[in-house]
Length: 344
Ligand code: DAH
Image 1 (cartoon, helix red, strand yellow):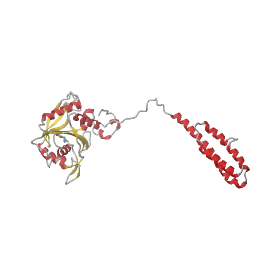
Image 2: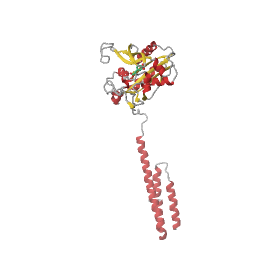
Image 3: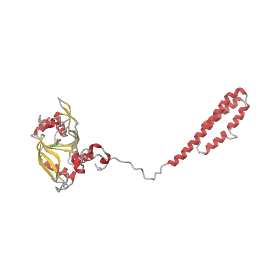
Image 4: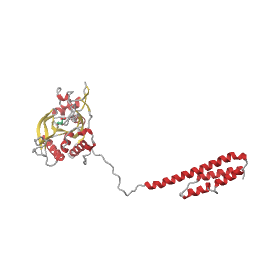
């Protein structure tokens, strides 16, 4: 065989080797024998190589060695792939086994109680309204009939961000009722859950951040008995159907008359440290919206009347779950939080 013939043959076998793509594992061994076996292609080509003239040896020698290296590497690679395929089989999951457990989180007790409050009032036709946490003096105090010298306006109680004009963190969600009355037309029936801020020392019973739900109902002929009936419904849905309520006279600048609502304690006054032997637990403030507030917010107080109420979510949750320390809500200790499960 002459030099050119050998060169073509090497190239042809190289192509063949490159094309080789086994469908079954046994074909790898057949391929090895074909190329590298004692009577295989490479041995045959090497014996041809010996016979050609010295001028052609440089090029054909190089191509032959490359072909041998290529074939050996390819066989090694194919064998490894075959092994991997085998071991893959071993790690296949048994799909009939029960699945590994996915750990689900739980809602924060404040979210659970907030959602439950929303749910109860939505059954009475109340919709949710929201307002900003950073407010101005008008919406938090002035429109709500707070006198100029009222202590809630003091730096000790309120976080001011800017002064003259005053920009502050809302101290209650009553600011949202002002925004609703200014922008919507009666009849209004809304609740406003949200976060509020007061400059208070943190203790087991108070915190500088907490949550409230504000309620507002404005229509023609809304009376105090509507307020009372709404609150009885809420108390019984929230705390159980045997819950009794008690309204005590109170004062808020934005309602007249104003009251505070107590619910009966489960101990019925026999004695517990929640109600301190009184048999009653305070849950919210309420009253008939002051006619001054209605007119400040652009509502005709000759035609419309209404009631409002406001409650602290932390306090409701504290009574519902018998939680001893308000700080637990904000520590996010998973051992505390995971105890609460609910449909809400
Ligand atoms: N805003 C009051 C507070 O933070 C709660 C409140 C009391 C809201 C009486 C009302 C209400 O709407 O009528 O203490």
